[in-house]
Amino acid sequence: MTTSQATAPRPGPASAAPALPGTGAVAQGDQRLWRWISFTPALAMMLALSVLPIANLVITSFQDISWADGKATRSFAGLAHYRALFSDNLFAAGLGNTVIFALAAVAGQMVLAFAMALMVSRIVRGRVFYRAIFILPLLIPGIVIGAIWKLMLNFDFGLVNKLLGLFGLMPHDWLGSPETALFSVIMVDIWHWTPFCFLLFLAGLESLPQDVFEACKMDGAGPWQELRHITLPLMAPTIIVTFAFRLIVAFKVFDEVYLLTGGGPGTSTEVLSFTLYQRFFTEDKAGYGSAMSVAIIFIVSILLVIAISARRGAGRQP
Amino acid sequence: MRRPFSSSLMLHLALVLCALVVIAPIVWTVGAGFRTQISLLMGHMTFTPIWNNFNEVLWSKTSDFLLNYRNSIIVGVASTFLCVVVATLAAFSLNRLKWPGWVVHIFLAWTMIFHMIPPVALASAWFGMARAVGLENTFTGLILAHATLNLPIAIWLMAVFVREVPKELEEAAIMDGASTPRVLWHVVLPLITPGLAATSILTFISSWNEFAVALTMTMKQTATVPVAIAKFAQDYEIQYTQMAASAALAMLPALVVLLIAQRYIVRGLTQGAVK
Image (cartoon, each protein chain N blue to C red):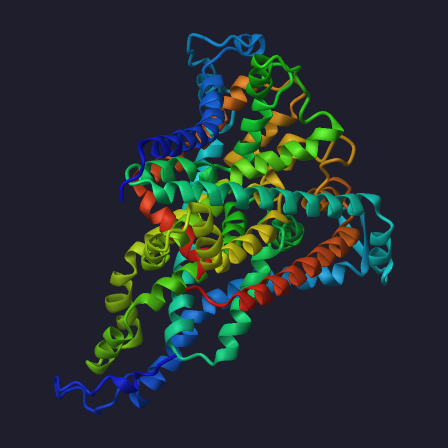
């Protein structure tokens, strides 16, 4: 970061007594006070509402809590909850499904979004119009998206089965059968989040230097060569950042699953957030739920480290 | 740049198809809100629109939807205000008031980790804390929770916008003897108003849409719109058309925002993730 050395002392009003470049010694005392005043609210909120609850989770994960007459008695449980995690079929199913869900959904979103962004970046008129339509799903509550697709995928009257019927295909119980439930939830997530990747890709494409493309045309390169050798390499940083960001957010999926399938049928759409929700709020196993939370936070932190180093490797934005 | 007519036609056809895939489910669902349950179940393609479902959802004595709507607005507005004020101060402070590098890095890294934790994992701890201080089932508890959930993104966004303000302007103001709050209020704030608008809109939408924490921290009286809609799906006999009508009502803020402030949303969404 460049300091203020470069700005020459202004010849302005003499009342600014000490001719100091930028923020000098005089501003220091004032600044020291104000930097605490301005930063304290955010610091206090993060400490009280994120550090404290997470510390609480860690402590609770080593405890057993039993309720009697509205009073909680805590007893030390050691590593029992963490050991139990390894033999918990629901946790294993949740972790497996979440990984499949996140990878499949994000991969689908990336490909579709890139194609859509390429197309929109090539048209001259109507960009704002298409962009407005494409980002609509992004602004709708997840639970409403669940409601929309619960109706759309309904066995008896859903539009999806109606359309299949037009092609002479048999109706299918998309959310009710174990083979297609996770697939359906993935498709809904693709519908929900492709717009986000689309927006980032479009912004990236619009900021690419145009002269490279001109030169490419002069050399007689076709559209595929242009895509492979110019557009994709130039877009690599944006693609990697978008992928990492989406992958991490996909791990949090909860709303749509809650409404569409409730984790079922069986464990076919059991995802981590949902398993967690059941431990805490349906079964009231605070100690075990906390251990699961800590494990999930640990997994997510590892993902974050991978994402950051991937971004480092890809270099900064052009 | 001139293109052959046929390829440009194909391009527009493909785009129209994409737009249809996006729009059709929404339009069909809103349409279902205007049908009778029988018409929907029979699967007739044409129907005479009726207001029954909306009347039932909004004005019926057994429905709390208006209350839920009010609750969502209260929580959304209050948590957005709190979050954006705190985030703007923090972004200004971290960027311009010469904090040591490690303070900035540790704080921002923590907000990143925090942003990646599933809210469900925090919900139980928050619920316990709210109960300990007597804030369970109050707006205050949910407002604080939503403001905290959105704080990381709001800080990153505001940091981007604050960084874009030319330093020379602030330095000139300081040279003229302006104190730090005056610099923030008179020099920086007027220049970041568009960024402030983008951040506020995104924060409000995010609070309006939030479900997991609202589900665990509210009761009948304080439930927000997503919680109310989720209830439909759990009824033994799902009132599909009423669910569609309330879904349509829940989408209104998104539509309004898209119509009047598309520029700001696009700006907010792209800046936050990339920079």
